[in-house]
Image (cartoon, rainbow, N blue to C red; front, top):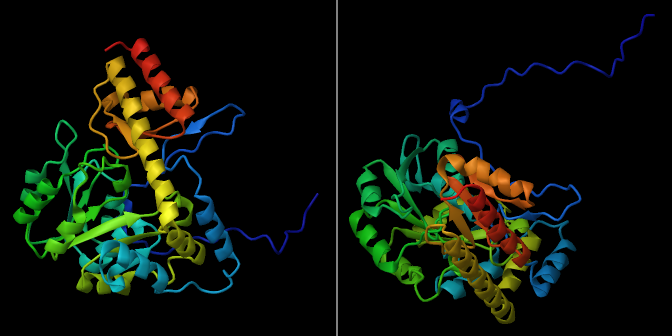
Length: 374
């Protein structure tokens, strides 16, 4: 029996387009694995998200912003930048906004790095760094962490060349948790050229012990090559709205405004971020930060009692340096209802999440050690 071909059904055309050759070398960004919907109680502790929903006033502000999303957002985000300028003691023009601090980092690369220029950062660190650098034609110079998973600042300074345009310091460092002190950062700045921009990525700053957190505001005021990166994704619980910013000196701030995507910060994101800065909301966020720090301490104490030797942790996560056992441990946890973030053959990161999830992390870690005695 013969059939007549459907004229509306045609074979897919062949693609003869030319892609940039650099894409073949870029690592893929691996997002935190979601918890499977299998009917059982499962916890996602793989993406460093807040275990708390947005504060009610922030949620309501974002919802109100939806009422006018038929209009473009304020491209200059005047009101939010004024509030952030006041918060950081700078002119509003020195605040550069985009869709999360990762996007601002991409803007830094676009503004600073020509083809073949170098970007120095520690490794392991935030997984997006090599993607952002490589996709814009830069060369990543990855400086290994020490055996204790701390920054090797001497090695980082030694890695700087006349092609270095940007240096990134993530503190607390994602995913290992180590942080830098004011003195360490100041000494490092004294060892690198002043024409290389040093970006201090503080996505996890609010979770750091307030007594020892680096005085980056003073560092920024003293050094014309320093830029600070912040986000509303973590403590503020706005990861899904995508908004972050840089505090930059005037010349760099202008450059960032030239290369950023126009209208990047949506109306709901701007209104929610602005509400997050209100005094009563800040008080609630401070209470949440205290809870997360206390939970982190509780988890680390329990793991120490089990015999784990964990690296220092100042973010909203803890890190298991498991080497070749990384994937096995992550799968072990997954089978027990806890989704963690595995990093190749380096280690596993566990977000400080809901108390039940943290309890389960302690139990999983105990079961692993009983199964594989140290």
